Amino acid sequence: MIVVGGGPAGMMAAIAAAGTGAHVCLLEGMERLGRKLNITGKGRCNVTNNCGVEELLQNTPRNGKFLYSAFTQFSPADVMAFFEGLGVPLKTERGSRVFPVSDRAFDISGALEKELRRLGVSIIRDKAAELLIRDGALQGVAGERDTYLADRVVVATGGVSYPLTGSTGDGYALARSVGHTVLPPRPSLVPLVAEQDFCARMQGLSLRNVAIQVRNGKKKAVYAEQGELLFTHFGLSGPLILSASAHMRDFEKEHYYINLDLKPALDEEKLDKRLLRDLEENANRDFHNVLEGLVPRLMVPVLVELTGIPAEEKAHSVTKAQRRRLLDTLKCLRIDIKGPRPVEEAIVTSGGVKVSEVNPTTMASKLAPGVYFAGEVLDVDAYTGGFNLQIAWATGRAAGEAAALSRTENRGGSNP
Image 1 (cartoon, rainbow, N blue to C red):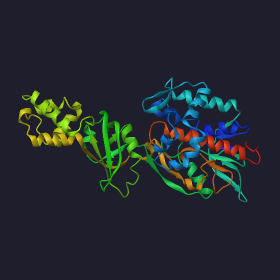
Image 2: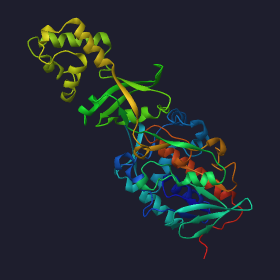
Image 3: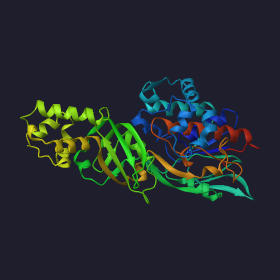
């Protein structure tokens, strides 16, 4: 059998299939396997999330129910046991995020490649160009360099994010060629472009323990969470924003805005008392000096502008109404969103092969016998925290095992 794509889902599919005794050919056009895997988690590789299946589903906003069977067959605990069995010690950090103890993504990709070779998987540097169908039956894959015969093919080519790592959307064309519906790829887990220019003025400022609430044009809250964000030259980034972007899926029809709470640990009454105390204790100091005790220095000029309180206004002169404007700004700083950054900058791609056309237990195509799908090529995506790699491992495992165990004959390999 053939696995198309040497990313996390493809490598796992090949390992699972070879583990049953099948002869497996892994096609990968890039020089190195797992290039995108090696940059995940800022090079540390957030392998999975150490949680149960229900929590996995809660963190998979796009077609999570489709993944229930795959998650049950190959849970985070199974993933952890798998990698530790390959000699990669793991650790669990804040938010149940799992990393290699070494903090090196290359240890994960290296262990996978070593296992592929141990199991005798043929790794061929070629790019799949076409699925070969003759008289309605799958015959193999035509590559750019050669033709490879097989009656089972796992398509695990990724999405279109980070194209330099090999994710260029090739799998969508393969899926369409056998009749599959492909939902348009969109960015998910992606930084956001802000309408206001004050974000750019705070470029590089990282805020921890802040809260956001995302609302649509109807003022309906679509996401709320607390965590860390980053101001950039174009708007907003950071873990909190990346997760929020997964809920902002309809920029063509909706206008989204973010209400940023800079002091989520204090309710309005407690914050007002804090402001009153700070102003009284610094009665003869300028307003901007008092602000420096409340927020990072880079934010001070922005708050001065947004509140309309002159920077040199003496603290004892700040009126109750001005103090109220400051409180409202600290608790509810509105940032309007123009849209996401390009899909090429997204961590994952939303969209892909329509899951209703795929068997959720085996990842087999319902339209093309012998074709299976795994990973980001499917229309599934999740939040940050190791959940997307868990999808890759679980769907790769399901597809690889099912394809190998259901093969009618084993014809993997290159035509002479």
